[in-house]
Image (tube, rainbow, N blue to C red; front, side, top):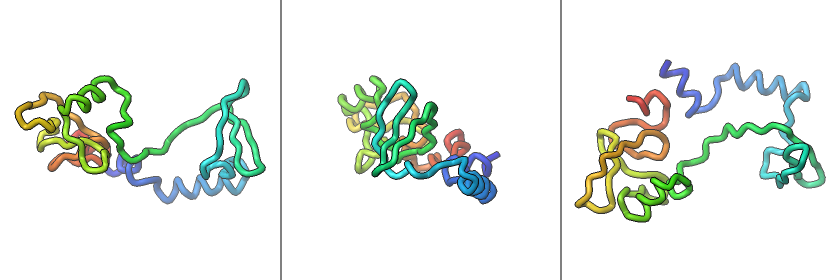
Length: 137
């Protein structure tokens, strides 16, 4: 279980890559628009533009995990805790610091926050944050 869930963090297995390459070689999967295209919403779906090419997609799946950015989280709870200095942000605003039990560490040393955070936005000293199973460790 642990090894299979690490694929979410560390990328696909060789067999999955081979299957993806087969789909590309057969023309089923198109990679012409993966390098920063312009995208416009249309009645038919999303129109992708890149250089002199254009294509419409009527379905999109975002499977890319961006690096953790705590300041990009839109949750009002997170935004208010940031504004009130209730959570300690790790350098470069990537995530928040937690203690060994997963509890948030406050910027204000006088306040203890009884909220735990696990996952990519947490930088804990004991609980791992890269693999799904480690988040439940």
